[in-house]
Every structure is written in C-alpha cells, then in structure tokens.
Image (cartoon, rainbow, N blue to C red):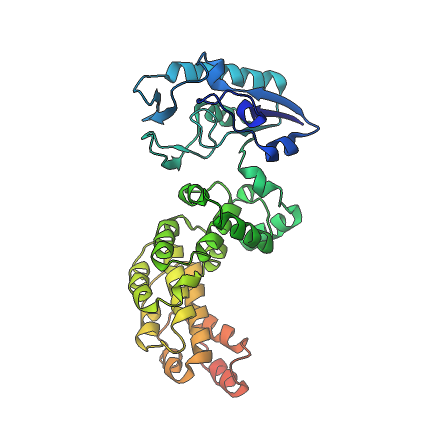
Length: 358
C-alpha cells in the first residue's frame, strides 16, 4: 500500500515551532508499506520555524495577522500532484492542522478551540477522491472488526455504513476508560461532530464516566444535538445523574421540548431509568404520554417506557392502556413489550393482550 504521511508524524522537524509530532502508532501502522512524506507548508516555501497559522474566514493567516494563504495553497497543490503521480492508497495526516487537519481544525482565534473542517491540503485530497485519515483515527482502526461492522450496519440502518469502523462495545468501553484519564481528552470531546459512528459511541462512554454532575450535564447538553442514532442515544447513561435526580428533572423537562428525535428519546429514557422506583410520580408517565411525534425511535422509547412502567408501577400505569391514552402504534407496541417481560405476571399478560387495538 502507498501511504502519504504528514512528515512531522514521521519525526521530521518541520512543525511550526521547529519540532515534530512523531507518532509511534503511525510508524507501526506504515511499517512494510511504501511511504511518501509531505509537508505542504514547507513545500509552499514557509520556513522552519514559523509563526503558527490558522484558517480565518476561509483564509490562512498567521498569529501576527499576516496572510499566508498563497503559500499554503501552493504547497497543497504541490503535494496533491505527488499524491496523483504516486497513486497513493491512503493519506495519514496531522490532526487539526490548517494544512493537514481532516475533520476538525482550529477555529482561527488562536485560542485552541476546535471546529468542524478540513485543512487546505486535506480538502484537496478529499476533493480529488483520496482516502484521508487523521493520525488519531489509527487508534480506532486498530480495534476494527469488519464482521462486527457489517452486522452493526444492519441494526442501525439510518447510519451510513461508510462511517462505521466496527469496534465492539467492550473494546470501546476500555478505550473510554483510558481516554478519560488522559489530559487531552477535552480535545476529543470538543471535536464535534465526529467523523465516525464509533467516535460517537466512544464519546457517550466517556461522558458516562464523568463523576462531577455539573460537568457531566454540560457535556451531555453539548453532545445531544449531534446524536443521530438510537445506539449512541441509549448508551449514554451517565453515572453522575443517579444522585442528582432533582436537578436532572429540570433538564429532562427541557429536553422533552426539543424538536430533535434523539434528544426526546434520551429524555424519556432518563425518566425510565431514574424515576420509576422510589422517585416515581404519576406526573412522569403523563409527560411521556403527552409526547407527540411521528418518529419511530421516539415512539419506540415511549413504548419501552410504558412497558417498563407496567412492570414497576402496574396499577398506576394500567389506566393509560385501558383508556387508550397512547397512539395506536405505541399502545400495541407497549403491550407487546410488556408481554415479553418476565416481570409481568401471566394473569397481567393475558389481560394486556385483551387490550390490543385492532
């Protein structure tokens, strides 16, 4: 395989400060392959060291306010020409760089804030159909299981299979524990939206490990708008929520007002997880019953909620079924899931079956 690599990742001293970003993970990955090192910034005539640059409103500027767009674009074109001539199979690039950043770059304020976007060279490669990966992706691809990816793609049909790496949940949980202790985990949590489905799963697991409640709920609120599938939504059960139910309820009420499918699903899921036992209040199933949505994944959670509620608060919840308080689909799905539950007595199951809407 022919792999083009940001030269700094190979240990070449071409970084803006005269240093490098040598990566043992990258070196291990490329071992045995044909490697084409490139530094678009040096190729464009910029010196080493040099004043750091970022993309500001589409133009590459350095921290001193000088326009360096021409140098960056000329260097990117030269490196693209190499990629075409060498017919590379893959490019592994330095994360967040204004040249090589793939998926995320610094926002142009020179404050360390990360935003969605691609560096000048990474954009050219992608526009020309080359496969591009940032160095951080290798950590995930080392855990790839192709068969699991293909299986998972069938379970989550609304997600593009091309965005799935295929990492089994136990492996992601292990990685989340490791990353949660790393000093730069904040950069990963800040880099939204993620490129890969597996990154979203990993993000959810890291948040779930956050011990401080205020920090945790802030992370959840930032992440919720980017959740785009039921699996990531349901694998976000923060441990910190358990001891802060009174405050959490205020957030749940706001999340239920959202127009986002998975924010609503998450809110209903939190009501199911935390408020069906000692903190139960008849007002809570009323909140779930009042949700109006045509979204399958919202109504599936509503059915799951009421089936679970029947198992835990049968006498209070039964009138919602007897009085047909739910739409037909959710009503029947609730009964189906309740009948499948081992926590519902045989007598209760028979009665619930008689309440199905035909």
